[in-house]
Image 1 (cartoon, one colour):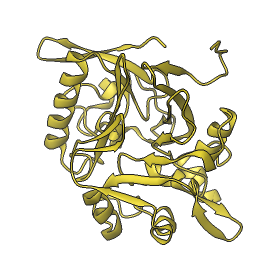
Image 2: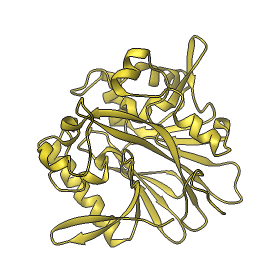
Image 3: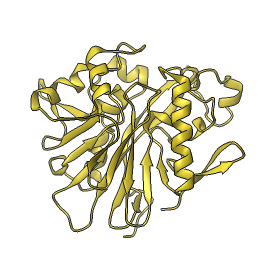
Length: 291
């Protein structure tokens, strides 16, 4: 299929196609995004605005299998569109630019999505699970099961974490009412060909998502590796609840990705969202992947 510069990027894994969707953009404080790493280092590759905020993407995936119309999977949903003027200004969110806009631009109706998988339930990953319908908040994908780790769901309901407004009931309650959740306990097959891999550290119930094609595999690590600049061993976010555990999860995942030649789709990376990993001395380096 011919792609123009404006069309979504598509990757053929062999009897399985992955489309990179635009789930919107927003900004967060650069210092918080890079934790203990000095600004003199991280700002060399990631520029900050006058308020020290950096641009972050919400890269989402659509997974399809040629010849099948009964199964379409969304991986991650971005920040969504349910924000007032104050929050839009604080995070620099354009409420017209979110996952459903990108999905419809790709010619896919949200009603045709059978499954949604999220790495965790922070607002910038789970905000697109629901949408406003007049005065009501309803599921954005009305016919889909939503796969998440049980530990993450329980922590979200208890608002467990250091950021007290990142787990939002408007992203959870409509799915509770629709009984749409499928809660996972550890590594599990979400649908045939897609597996959830527990990668704790950012949150206790964080998971990465592995997509297996006939010819190659791809992984979506969520906030385990939020941008390409976070590939280094000590490059954790201040938002990570358990930095050392996050580092171990990152090392384990990147080792498998390098050894097995996986594609890596990076959630918040605005410039080079699809990469491959190679071993370099005692750690890893990332290189842009070809379609």
